[in-house]
Length: 214
Image (tube, rainbow, N blue to C red):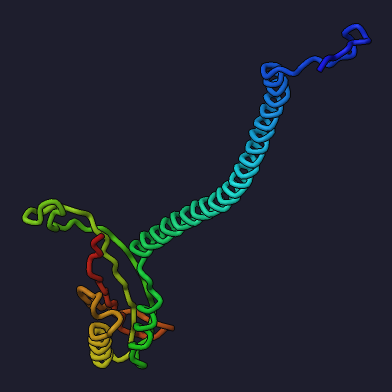
């Protein structure tokens, strides 16, 4: 078959060659593949960033909760420390000051009707005692400990009967559930005097409490 070119070679299409077709495919396909890969990488990064953002927000929420809990714990620990220090101060104060209300109530309840209460005097003084050493109980150390005394002044018109009533008061104090276990000794002294212009006998009971060791 013969082909006549009436256009001088300008209208006859060029025969396609395998190499040209492959080159054309490469020119079209390679950029397309690269574009698809780039888009895929971009989308994958967006998904990764979204997941990481959600995880970060979740972690920040957890950290916020933990921070509040830690702050609350620190606040409670500070309050506990203050409370412990306060209770320690109270304990120290109580160890230095005898609660006299129950003792005075006992004295009033034990006082015979025939005696007149003229004085109540609470005192504290320090004495030196030998006690076992904490480091070595076999040895002793000298310590200064507080000893409290309660002076009770009473009087009666009948000397003979007043002496008996004072002894009765002394026995009541020693056997009292409140004062008895705390008393070390109860001594009595007497002297003559007057009360409201009348002759009376004055007695003073000196109640010495047991030393209070720290």
